[in-house]
Each structure stands twice: as structure tokens, then as C-alpha cells.
Image 1 (tube, rainbow, N blue to C red):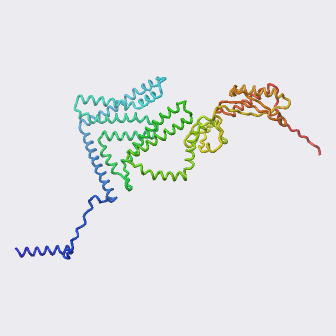
Image 2 (tube, rainbow, N blue to C red):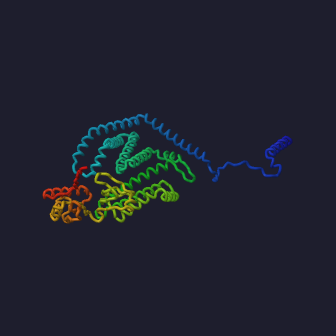
Image 3 (spheres, rainbow, N blue to C red):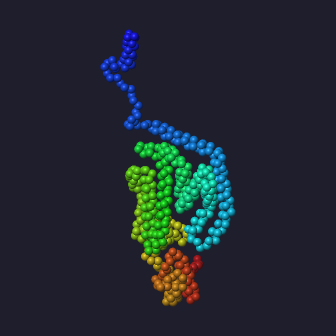
Length: 479
């Protein structure tokens, strides 16, 4: 036994020595490399994608199993009864809408003198009568069933009623948003959130959206962040738009503020509220705003090269609003363009001419160019017309007739009486100038000149005042 044991021990020692030769040399044996499972282990990009895919797959399988269990539960008698009740209520709501809808519309048409906001509310209600009837009927059915039977037998009806009520409230609230695109974004986002919350699928959805992400350095962009950004920023922009529109309407209705200051106040309010909505939304979804410093530098470089004209127009617009040199309603002439200022924008001014054309003139041109403002300090405009009469006519009588003819035109001001002067003796006529004033240059200048000329023609014709015209005598000389 002793010899056998000794041989086995020697063989084991030889095997260990052969497996680890360094032990015979007196050197410590090298330990096998350990797996990096500590805190310093850095996962490879492929491992991160694998983990994210595995998480998404697990959650998807969980949702699939829940869906299968729900479909299986529908085969139970009382669950099937509840589905049938929901379908019956839908049919009843549709029939009520078909019967009562025209009567409600006729009653709305008979409401004369009601405020606009009240009529708009009635229109929204009329458009959603089917949903309103459905919500009212299903809650009534739920209340009755909870009184006469077990609560579990109205569980699905309660879920459907809660979802229908929440969706209807979302529709009414989002009607306050005027922008159709923004309204659609907020509405569908709210519908999705409410549905997931009521059905108890919020945690699984958040897990899937959070797992689907793209990492760039230390920045991680997930689908959850994108969805949150769209919903939060959309809601804040809608709120900012509602506040700015309401405030702007109040500012525009204030007659004590000059038109140019109204435009400036409205622009400042819009910039402040929209900027706050954007930055609050960005911070709410977890994006660090310190990274925008690089973006600010890039914008500064862009301004120095490609956006000079844009910035010049923006600054010029602010200067125009501050110095009040041009304001909405002023009648101006710029080159061959004559019209009145319709609106003052951040980049251009809208000038409407008498023929209905609308010119968009850059603000920089209004600052650097020569602009004639016919109504800068007041609305009084003096117009001059020239005419001539023959030498055989009495100039004193001509002056009196011209002044009387000008005063007979409606738009010519009476408290600033017209004047007529001789300006020279021409080759074939005595030359006169007739000056008169008007207070409504927006009504046009060419038409008022034409009316005064017609009044002169009628006055001269009635008093035998002749207007000379060139005459030439041609003599034919014989050879």
C-alpha cells in the first residue's frame, strides 16, 4: 500500500512539474488570465448592441405573451359579452349622431348674435357628437353593471370608457392649438401616452425606447429621448404660441401705443416665449446646454460669412421700429415703388401699391436708401399740377377759375385752400402751377390729379378759356 501510494504521489508530482515547468526552476507559476468582470472593464460596441437587442427581445416577448393572454381571455363568456356591449354602444352612438346631429346644427344656425368663441365651441362639440354620445352611454352602462353584477364583469368596459374619455378630452384641449402640424403632434403624442398608461404598458414601452439608442462618445441618444423631445417641445411651443397670440392681440388693441412700438413689443414677446419654450424643452429631456457653446461659435462664423445680409436686415428692422421713421400705414415712395406699409417684418417690409401688388422690400434698403415718407409726421400731402392758357385769356380770371375748380373736388382740403401762380411765359402759352392739399395719400395720387384736371377742363370750357397747342405752318416753295 505504501509503495503504491508513493508511486502514485511521484507520478502526480511529475505531471504537475510537466504541466508547470517554471515550478522546477524555482519561479512562481503564472496564473491563467482572469475575465475582465471588474469595474474597469469596458464593454465593446458589439456587446452593447447585443445587450440592447436582448433587452428589446425580452420585453417584446413579454408584450407578446401578454397579448396572447388577453386574446385568450376574450374567449371567456363575460369578456365576449363586454366586447359585444362596446360594439352595440358604438352603433347606438352612431344612430344618435345621425338623428340629433342635424337638429343641433339647425339650432346652432338660429343662434344669431352669439360671440365667435361660443360658436366655435359649439362647432367643435357638433363635430364630436358621436364620441360624446359613446362616452356618456358607456359610462352609464358601466355604472349599471357595477350595481347589478360583479365588478370583474365590467372590467373591459371600464378600460374602454376611460380610454374614450381621455381621448375626447385630448381632442378638446388640443383644439386650442392653431397650427395644424403642432396640433397633430401633440394630439397623437397625448393619445399614445394615455393609451399606454391606461393599459399598463408604460414600463415596457419605456424599456424598449430606452434600449434602442445610439451612443456618440459620452452622448447617448435613445428613441425615448427623441419621443420625449417631440412631445415636450411641441407642447411648450403650442403654449408659447397661445400666450404670444393672446398677448399680441391685447398689444395691438392698445391705441395708446404707437404702431411701430406695437410691432416691436410683439416681436420681442415672440422671441422671448419661443426661446424659453425651446430651452426649457431641451433641458427637460436631459440635453446639456453647455454643448451649445460650439454651436454658437459656428453660428458666429456663419454670420461673418454667409448671413451678413440677413443680420443687416434684422438689425435694420429693429432700428426702424425704434426710431419710428417708418410704421405700418405710412405712405412711402422708394424708387419706382409707391404704396403704403402693410406690415413690418423681421427681415422685410410689405408695401402694397394702388394696383394691388405687394412688394417685399428688405429693411436694409429702407435704412440706406432714400425713402419719401408722405405721412411721416402727418397725413397732409401737397400736390402740384401744371397747365397753360393762351395769351388772349385774362390770367387773373384763370387763377380764380383754377382755385375754384380745385376746391370743387371732394378730396381736396378746404381749410388748406389751393393756390395758383404764374410760373412763366412760354412760347405759345402763359404757364401756371396749381397747388392743393389732400389728407389721404393712401387713396392714390394719380386719380386725384386726374379729377382736378377734369375740373379745370370743365371750368375753362364754360368760361371760354383756351388751352394752346402747337401749330406749324408748312409752305410749299416752287422750284
